[in-house]
Length: 76
Image 1 (tube, rainbow, N blue to C red):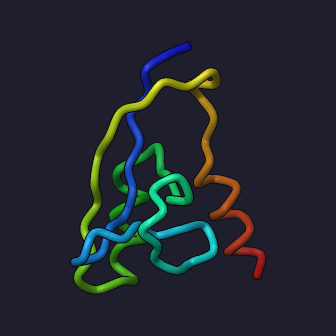
Image 2 (image 1 turned 120 degrees about the horizontal axis):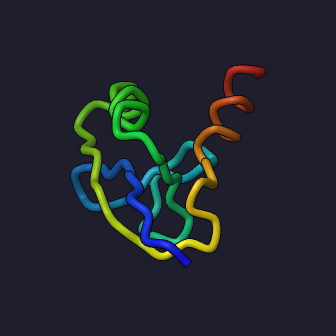
């Protein structure tokens, strides 16, 4: 296990952006970004949102969750 830094996008009432592209109070469903710049770029599409940094333990420290989502979105 390793400690990893991740970023999420939150709206003005504390809901997180999910991988389905909507906001939810379910933090476990949050879209996580490994790179702050990528999170900031995505947040630009949602006025009034902020990028929040957090740390968590991960079995796969190099797992890049947002990369799979980015590829799916660019293919659409």
